[in-house]
Length: 432
Image (tube, rainbow, N blue to C red; front, side):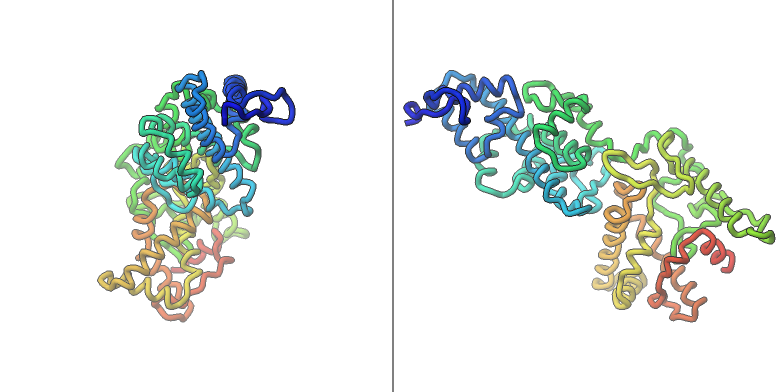
């Protein structure tokens, strides 16, 4: 029946009427010329899978290796099509829909859509990537059927290409476009794109890894300027303690063992001294943090605080908004939740209170990485860092509560965010 069936040679409203097998040969020839935007690659997935069967049934004089390349190209196209559909439906800044696709690339996450820098283990390995592919493309029957055409060798050969186009589509494409336009854009912009989009080409794995890891903080560049073990080695997980309910000291660097002062009391008795002192704190803090946390040539903060991080640009510094994110996550809790967390810190043997702390640490990580997004949001040590500062946070809440005549447990303290300024925090610390 397929041999006798007739259709337009170009599968469109124009072109001569030919036997269906001849039209299939045209589809292959068009793919050889047009590539990723050819008719056969753009054909709906269910129909494409059927066409693959028809090539076998009618026994056309087409090299099996060529059909294999067409199938691989279709997979690349479909991965991008799914992401472009997501961009079309995207609800403002909600990036949660990107998580299934990002799981094709990264093995761990700090929040939905925020990968975790696990060093050599950051990227999803071949077999696990393929396991996530059906979820990313949608658990539909046509997807299952299409993916079943790939044997283990073919799967391994396609993983790095899937990861690259996913990276480019999610991190460099800022709005919906057609797959054709996207492929044209990355071909013009990305050095690896031509090889990536041609399954027959050799794709250098070291270069692929560099691209996929490029969103993470370049710790090596920072360490070149630091002497490990000296007072400038500020990259441990023991973080500066809270000096006020809002964060670490503004008078000095709170990192253990560091003696750098930000505050100079010389002009406090002069007119406008508070603002002058605050400017001095910002300047000295910026200089110090640029040296111990900033990536050389990238970090240029005027206050020393982290820059906003938006992939594919890597963080410009190794620090983040750990303290203020802790305070903001805390401020959203109920009194009962606060009491449970404080009790858990005092009696870690109580499982319910332990669970409360685990949940709160996760809340802080989400606030820092998904809501704040300032500085090194990809750090793998955030949970440990939160735990190291919680005792000083509870102590700061207790001290502030006592000064205000509240219960010294700290659960009644309510953050007044108008107090979160250099001047207010400076005066608070000087009054302790």
